[in-house]
Each structure stands twice: as C-alpha cells, then as structure tokens.
Length: 303
Ligand code: NAP
Image 1 (tube, protein in one colour):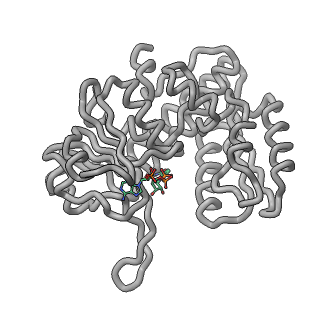
Image 2 (spheres, rainbow, N blue to C red):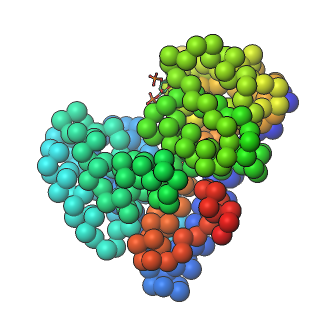
C-alpha cells in the first residue's frame, strides 16, 4: 500500500472540538445555546442509527438537541405543522428532517418548508440556489466534509482537475458547486458518462458518490491522485457476514493513489461534524453575528 490514508474519524473529531469551542463561546459571551431539532418519521433502522448518532454528538458538543419521532403513518400536513412550529421556535437554530420519508409524504414540499436560515442540511432550494450563485448560505454537510478531507492533502484546490462521479442533489451537485468556489476545474460524471475510467484518470482529486460497491478500480486513478470515497454500500462479505464497502476498490486503488479515504471512517464521520458546524453557523447568522470559520468554504480562508 502506498497511499496516505485520510483519517476521517480524527479530522471529524478535530472539527467537533472546534464546534464545541464555538458553542462554549457563544453561550458564555452572548447567552446563545445553538439548538438542533432532528425529525424522524417511521422506524427505518439505518435512519434510527444515524439520528441516534446525530443526537448524541449534538449534545456532546454542548448544543441543545430536540428529538421529534413521528409514527410512519404521519401525514404530510402533520409534518408541515411540526416544521412550522420549529421554524417559529427561537430555541431551534437548525432543523434536520431525516430522509427518506415514508411514501405518503412529498419530501420536496417538506424540504421547501424548512426556513432556509435553519436549513442545516442545505437541501432547501433557496440554499441550493445561493450555493450555485456563489452567495453565502448553508451548504449540504457531506459535500462540505469532502472538501475538508481533500484539503488535508491539497490545501489549495485552485486549478486542480477534479472529477465528481454522481450528480445527486445531496452530494454530487453541491460538491461540484463547492469545488467551483474553490477555483478547481470540475467534471461531473454520471451513469450516462462515456469512457468513465478515462474521465476519472484525468483527476488530481477524484470524488466517488455513486452507491455502487467498489466501482472505481485501480486503472481509473491517476498515479498520486487524491481519492475521496463517499459511497456506503452494504454487501455480504466472507462467510456471509454483512460489511460496508465504498464506491472505490480500496485495496487496489490504495496501491496507486497518493491519498485515499477508507470506508468506513472517511467521509461518513465528517457529515455529522459538518452538520454541527452548520448549526453553529445558523445560530450566529440568525443572531446577526459573524459566523465562525470552520475552513469549509473559501470565504472561511479570508476570515
Ligand atoms: P444517488 O442519489 O443514488 O445518486 C447516485 C449518482 O451516481 C447518480 O447521479 C447516478 O447517475 C450515478 N451513477 C449510478 N451508477 C453509476 C455508474 N455505474 N457510473 C457512473 N455514475 C453512476 O446517491 P447519493 O445519495 O448521491 O449517494 C451516493 C453514495 O453516497 C451512496 O452510496 C450513499 O449511501 C452515499 N452517501 C454517503 C453519505 C455519508 O455521509 N458518507 C451521505 C450521503 C450519501 P444518474 O444521475 O445518471 O442516475
């Protein structure tokens, strides 16, 4: 193995430490304790586990955590009612609605109903538009985490060739926008891209957000490139044991890449840390205070 392993757990722990310091200062100097409301509808086991981690880490960073569990039969109107109450609640600075939602609820309507100032997931169309227009706003957590991971290897992404595989609204597209804001040259690939391995081989920094186990092979990667693997795929391993793998064939790609994130322990831990950072930023923006610099957006470097 030649690649440097990018330790997402340690980098996320460092970011959570900075968030906890910022929370402490806000509460001591301004009397503001940031509050994050997490809404879970139904009992999808993966969602329950994500929500439990989010609640634990929110409280661990000194913030207030508000836990809203609704039955799986909840109607769209009932959920909109809760969102309206959270939008109006001054102790709530961030609102996260755990996806996916049950099929009777229109997720687009719910996301659009969250106050953009409290939209710490960055999925509201207002925040997506602000990101695309290069205006300040709340950006999605997983892409923010990917940028921080890449910057631990390449402190400046300016002028670098970057390739993002995947164009979802929650990862691929916002990641491409954040990379443009870093002055990287950005190619977004997807299921209809021709000659995908050759496209990927152009990348100085390659991001895989696909949801296909070990799609990216060693001959898709330029020697020395940085590889950030966002994929979380549950597969059956040796002896029928379930295990999680990324979108990158880690062992073989690590022979050629300069640096690589593992799965688990790479992009995953960064998502929650960035959610906490977004909640502090939201609390500051709502109070009209300067937002703390967590190094996630190019504007942070100028602060
Ligand atoms: P998604 O909405 O399913 O989007 C997948 C994207 O990959 C689509 O743009 C799709 O192209 C593209 N794609 C699918 N098969 C492809 C192929 N064979 N070649 C090239 N492109 C292909 O998934 P997502 O929500 O963005 O998530 C992607 C992965 O990241 C999943 O494994 C997910 O679990 C993981 N994830 C992890 C975190 C975290 O915290 N670590 C957070 C979010 C997501 P089309 O647009 O053409 O269909």
